[in-house]
Length: 224
Length: 63
Length: 246
Image (cartoon, rainbow over all chains, first blue to last red; front, side, top):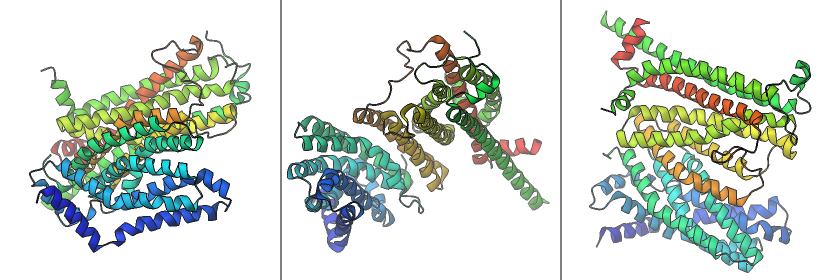
């Protein structure tokens, strides 16, 4: 079995051992969404208007919540050190880890957003656009929050610092996604913006793992 | 080109009707630059004091 | 041979001695320029026919806003120097610039907000330039926070370097996306490539103040760097000799 397959199998085993890790962010997302009508008004027109934006922000927060400790357990039990000795570039392994994280932790989060959409009576065509933007944008978001997690690995008192450090970098993604949602509400063409969003994700997914691997190296104290 | 734009010094400080906005901003600018200068000087003094303490400790160890 | 000056600047001891002189020169020069430029702008530049006297905030706001962005770029240059030449002094510079850069960004934000009150009737609008300045402030805060969270200075420096480099790549994207999102603001009042729309009696004092604030920033960064160098090199012989002599 190749290293890549074994890594994915290991991730699956880890999830099977602690399935709660998948459900907590989903739980958080639905809880936050339930708070919105309580804080605002149960008026469905108003909810539908801000609903997609609320879901986007809540999903962003849930994603940050479960990416914050992405490398923590692998760091403390020495798996990351073992990575240095494999005959693969560290950035490639980091990329795999991020892909696995996206598949097993972020994707479930995206798949649950239609329920949140129903709760806030978001119109169907906007909901579809919302799903597409989340699919296209979350790879970039996962990469950046992974970088935040890697940078703060070595400090015991970092708290939510990794999140705070990376959040400003999400601005272009949020703006473009919001643009898509606004156009979907109008019924105008969303494709150009989606293409830009996709381009951002692709570039982030190729370059950020390199930065993440540098951050991991410096925390392990290996030669760089 | 260099002509004082205000009738009197009092008018200059009043800067009607926007003096309340203009002067505090410049005051804050002065405060920030002055404050940072002070912080730098203090940090410098503290560093020197730290080295001095270390030196004294080394001397008492030697004697 | 041509690079000797560069490596000499990398020596903490030589830096400490030279920076002391440079700091003094910069400090006085900045003081003269800033007093002259500010008084000129406040008292002698003509009144703006649209905004009245409130426009005089420009003589602080624009230089400080320029600096806020330039210092992030300077920090990125330091990060490159740190990674390519492993020069410790670049890390010291990064640490100093982060704090000063944040201070200038905050000053730009506050002066912009106060200027907004008489101009737009409100302290804060979600306009493109205010928003990207706010995000810049958060980026600076992130760099400062990351350094504070990691104990080992070398490790903290490298982590900050990575963050700064990722940030500087994203900064133009953030800026353009925010601009696309919202374009309400008056167009940039001084662009380097275009002839400014202001009369000379207005922009000459602005230029004096821009120069003054840049030199003031150099003064502050050098001062901060000297203190940090002394702190980090406290076990070096030259520091002990220096303090022992005094």
